[in-house]
Length: 264
Image 1 (cartoon, rainbow, N blue to C red):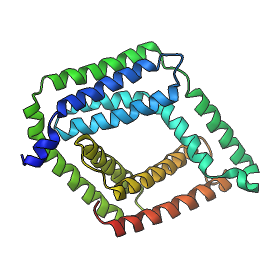
Image 2 (image 1 turned 90 degrees about the vertical axis):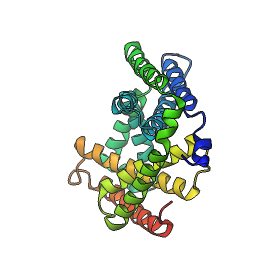
Image 3 (image 1 turned 180 degrees about the vertical axis):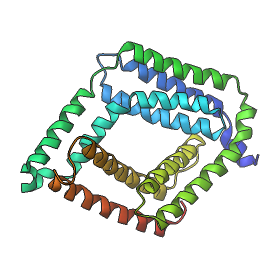
């Protein structure tokens, strides 16, 4: 390992264990009536993404990574409901007569109700299961020495960097391919998480691009939800016109940003 990489990786296991501790504490907070569920869910999912990326970076077994993924999915429904409502509100329906369209009113009311329901606390049994899964991750890390983890680090960094470059090129060539945007977003978030974990300064171009890809992903998720809940393009044309127009515009901007930025 190069000296720079060794210095960056120093204390890596302690940082990963620290993420486990923070996740467990936040999970416990879900049962505290004085805390807001939505805030804790948001933080748990952020911590989980950072932990999952760190585990993959140092070559931990797939079962260990999947344990963290499982905890995130347990809470995904609550977080997604809030995210869909925020995406819908950003479309600005109250700014014109289209806001009175029956389908627009129906979608807005339904999304609002689902978001309010997402504020309910999960059962204690589910929280206990999630905490146990994170405990297993901590135990798996305890069985690895610092040298073992650092030994995997250079390969992990190279692999993540190559993945970003590959998916950048795919978006540039196939900008109408929706999965390409999603895959680039995941690769960029993993790369930015790696930089944060290793204490490296993050590239603001990458950060901005990842945020825009997050907006694109939110619109894709909203479209999927609309179709699954009966609001097809045929039955809710006013809704789809605005969502599709914004989605196309954003994707065009993303391709332009990717072409001008190159590899972050």
